[in-house]
Every structure is written in C-alpha cells, then in structure tokens.
Amino acid sequence: MLLIRVLALTLLSSLTLLPTISKADNVAPVISLIGLERVWHAVGTKYSDLGATAIDDIDGDISDRITSTGTVDVNSLGDYTIVYSVSDEAGNRAEEVMRTVTVTEDLQVISFSSTDEIIDAGGSRAYELIYRTEPVAKQSQGFALIFYHDTKKTELVFQLAEGILVDGCDVELRGPLSQMDLEDTDSDSATNAVFALGLISEEEGEFPCDFDGEITFGTLTISAVDADYVGPIDLNLQIGSSPGYAPVQKLPSLSFLGDTDGDGVRDDLDAFVLDPNEVLDTDGDGIGDNADKDDDGDGVEDAQDAFPLDSSESFDTDTDGIGNNSDPDDDGDGVIDSLDAFPLDFSESEDSDSDGVGDNSDAFPNDPLESRDTDLDGIGNNADKDDDGDGFSDEQEAIDGTNPVSPFSCRAGCFSFDVDESLQAQALTDGLLVIRHLFGFSGVSLTSGALSDDAVRDSPEAIADYLTEADSQLDIDGDRLSQPLTDGLLLIRYLFGFSGESLISGAIGEQAERNTSEEIERYISDRMPLQ
Figure 1 (cartoon, rainbow, N blue to C red):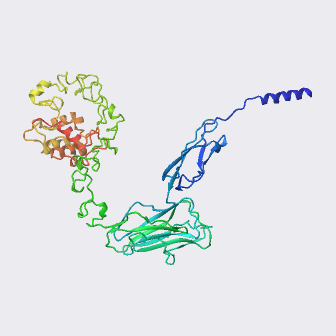
Figure 2 (figure 1 turned 60 degrees about the vertical axis):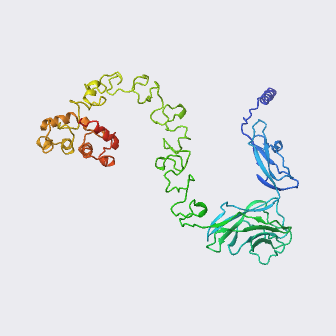
C-alpha cells in the first residue's frame, strides 16, 4: 500500500513538471471609441476626452494600455484629431482609431442635406434639415426654428422626422407658431415674413429630449408661390432657445430657375439658354455638341473618336473602356505597352529578328532577311525564284503581268472562275456553270445556254472535269464543303457586282472560316482571270 502511494505521488509530481502548451497569439486587439467619432466643442471651454476601450482575445480588457496622441486647443477654432493605439502582450498592434474634435462657436447648427441650390421655376424641393448640437442643448422648455422668408416667393412646410419624439421625450411639435413670442428675435434679413416651429415641453424644467450629436430633424419643403418667378430665394434661419436667440444664419443661396428655350433643361444646366436644339458645349468653342463634329475639341471627329467627350482620349484599341493614353496595355494582349513590340496589335507582341514583322506572322522569326514563304517550300520569298510555286518564275510573271505571290494568277494552267475559258468570268456563264455543277447537273443540262460565244472550254465533259478537279477551290466560304446555296450563290452575287452585307447575307455556311464580305471578296478576286 505504501509503495502504491509513493508511485502515485511520484506520478503527480512528474505531471506538474510537464511544460504548458500555450495558444499562439497572432490576433490583434480591437479598439472601440467611447462616444462619437466626430464631436463639436464650445470654444473657450475645457475639453475632457471620453477615451476608448480595448479588448484582446487572449489578454482580455487592455484599455489601461491605450495610448493617445493629439491635443485640442480649445481657444482656437478648427478641427483636431486624437489617435488611439494599443498592443497586446504578444506585440500584436491594434488598428488605430481616431476621433475628430471640432472647436466651434456654433453649438446649435441647422444645415441642408442636399447641396442642390436650384429649384425649378414654379416647382418645389424637399430638404432634410440636419440638426447638430454638442454638448447637449439643455433648454428649460424647448427650442424653436425660425425661418425668415418672402411669402410672395415661397411657401414653407415642415415635417418632423419619425423617431424624434420617443418615450421619455414628452414634447409636442408646434408650428407655425403664431402664439410664440418673437419680439426678441434678430430679424436681420431681407425677408418680410416669419415661419416658426418648435418643440415645446409640457413640463417646467429641463428639456427632456437628448439631441446630442447630429440627427435628421425633419424635412422642409420649399415651394414657389409665383410660377413665373425666376431668381434668388431669400431664406434665413434663427435658432431660439431659453438662453436667447442665436444670430440669424444664412441658408444656402437658393434660386428658382426656369427653362427659357423650353428644351427640358434648366437654364443653369443649359449652355445655350436661347437655343432649344443645343444644351452642351463640351469643348467651350461656342458650338453646341449636337452641331459640333468634334465635341471635345481634341482634333479627332466624334465619328472616329472612341471618347467624343474626353479631350484627353481618342482611341480604345482593345475596346476595354480605357483610352489608349491611360491604358497600360492598349491592345489587351496581356503584354504591357512598354514591353510590347506591337502595342496596337493584339495578335503580335514580339519581333525577335527586328524586321518589323511580328513573330506570329513571320515565317522566319529569327531571320531578319525573310518573313514570307508563300508556297510553304521552306525558302523565303526574298530568296525563292518562284514565290507562289505555280511553275512560273517571279521574273516571268513580272513579264506576263501576273501576280507572283498568287498560285491562281498565271497565263495558263492556274485555276480561275473563268470556267469556259472565255478570258472573263461572268455571272450568267461561269457563275451559272458553277452553281449547276454544284446542284449535280451534267451533260447538256450543265452547259445549255451557259457558255460564252468566246468559250474555249465548251464541252460538258471538259467543264465537268475542270470543276470536279477544282472542287476544293469552289469552297468559297471555307467550310470544307462546296455547296450551291452558299458557295455557288456567293460566286454569282459577286459576278453580278454585289458587295458588303448584300454579298454574304444568308449565303455563309455555319462552319465557314471565311465569313466576312471582305474575306469572300478577296478569295474570289484572287481567282479571277487576267484581263
């Protein structure tokens, strides 16, 4: 029994010597302000900062470690910043928190929520009134807002904001207050009428509503009395309370403005108040944007300007909405312009041999003397004596007047759409022969009425053999099929003089590689007979 107790004590003793495994602390504490981020303080009075608290997930409440920087000069008007900092035992530093203290003479201020000082002539506009007071305005019975305005110009209506009168705030809204004693007000304004409203406590003593800080007090709607009046609106404000009346405060310089030219745009927003056809003049040249061919005056006409209202931009090569002057990658190929040998070409970015031809297009990207190999024989065109591999040397083709880089351009033996060898390709002969062949016509039905008077190839068998051997050439749209209602129709339209959309509309195969009018026209043109 004694041996067991000794062993147990030894085991307990060894356990107490095991190292304590602590949790890694890499989370910063969090600082929270006591009070508001922005406070207003009366000039000339002592300021006592409310401070802040700090909580850490490991160390708990470390508010006593908070340090603050910044001072408030209560004798000088202005904004002052106090910054709070703290770190936990592990050295994790909290994100700093700031409070702005504004030392001011005006401890009760009314301001408008909207900065728009223009009201349509004959119309109205509602403004939220922001009431700010700091510290708490302690009134004996209440306070009043007194508006001075001209009843010949304006009508005022006030709506108290919801949530202002709450439980424990036993007051009532009165207004306009005709019975209120206004003899002591300072009516230093150019207006001739008073519109007063106020919150009045039913009980003597301290005003029961706490309006500390900044709140939306209500909505003031200003309406025109005379629908034809255009001009300034005189509107001043005074705050009255039991200690007396504050000085009259000039509210925003409001105005009623009309639309002289009746174009639906208010005069203050219209650069041409007498011209109903114009509103804007972006470049200030005296010509309205509707008539101006270069709205922003950058020298690039609007029709060619990707940014017609921005004089600093004209082009947007990659159509990403960012002008080339600001875009670090104009062509959007993923290579920034400063490293791109072709900053305006999406398909190219490098030119290894510096021959002016991008590597992607250069048949010999490392040979500055060569870039093209038309016949793909491994010999660059500069060194190749027969660039197109049609059996006629470049020198001979120059003498013949044929194209040395087109295997379809030669005096004889090259495919062309001059099917009947009349030395010209025509819609009602060659075009008709091709479409009949693609529809499966043969024999006399293939050639009847479709041969030129000058035809050299004039037998049905010769025509059929020629077109059968050239089947791949008849695939005009490049969909790997030669069909009458696509390729045949494209050829006849081209020979009739069609171009653009009218050439290709409804005549392109679903898998076509050549699907634009430019590509189709180029393909057929390359296979036209020499004249």
